[in-house]
Structure formats: C-alpha cells, structure tokens
Image (cartoon, rainbow, N blue to C red; front, top):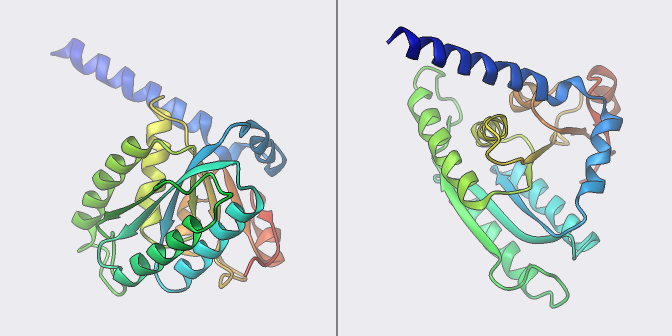
Length: 227
C-alpha cells in the first residue's frame, strides 16, 4: 500500500512539473505567432459558443477565418450550453450558409454541435454551481476526446472555461495537443472578463481588441477591433 502511495505521489509530481513547464504564460507573444507556421495541412476547429454578444462575435470571427483561407480548415465543431437554444439556432444558420459555399473544404457535413451543461447561470451563486461545473468538465472531456481538435477557439463565455482547462489537462497527459486561442470580447476595454483572467495562464495565444488591455497584460496580442 505504501509503495502504491509513493508511486501515485511521484506520478502527481511529474504531472504537476509538466503542467507548469508547458504553461504558455512563460513564452512571449512573438513565440506564439510561430505556431501558425505548423498548420501546413487542413486542421479541425472546436469553437465554444456563448450567448448574446459572445455568439455574434464568435460566428463573425469564424466566418472571417473560413473566408480568408478556405483550404486550411476541414472541420468545425461547436460546443454550446444546453440551455442556450438561441445560440444553437444561430449556429445552424451559420452552418447552412457555409455549406452553400462550393469552394470550401467544409461542405460535406463536416459540422457537429455538442451540448454541455452550463457551469453557471447568470446570477447563480458560486457554491450552487459546483455540481454543474463538474458535469461540464466531464462533458467537455467527452467532446475533446471525440473531436480531437487541433485548434480550440474561445472568446469568453463561462462555458469555455471547463472546455479550455480540459484541453490543457489532456495535453499535459500527452493524449492530444490542442492549441487554445482566446479572443477577449470587444466589450472588454480596460479589464479582462472573469474567463479571460482564468484562461490568461493556459491560452496559447491571448488576443485583445483594445490597446488598454495590451498595455496591461504582457502576454496579450493586440489585433485591433474585429467587430
């Protein structure tokens, strides 16, 4: 029994050291930009869709990516909270518009929408959201193992936090390497959102749309207003 405990302790220590070692926060933004050169073959995207303005911004961002380089991405999958029916309708309309484009690689049903529990509803206390968050983590793990995305694209809704942390955890265990790109909402001018503060450490690229944020956070990349 003691030997088993020692083995488990050493395993946890190794995992902890690896997690700290691969944290993107140790790298400069200029090093992050070189990742774009690795995408020499078509890749898959997993996008976390929030609600309201988050949904509109993410779909517009995705549309820009797919229109700019129609040969780089062969599959786009979506994660949306189960209670967010409006966003699901908008995603379905977005998919239909892309499928009508005959020059895109993404035209043969290369879309899937996955629903996961929402970690926290607006106004919900942090204590009462513990169980929903745990369910969201397990649902996120299922989606990530099923889709094995090369790129995880998020822009701040609470739903993106468990998904991003799971993606990082999977990378720590050498099971799959997913690059996490976080785009802070245009509504955040002088301070980061709660999701931004949490994911600032683990995001491979952290993009902001206002110079005020770029000047405050050394890891961030200023990209100007996208919307």
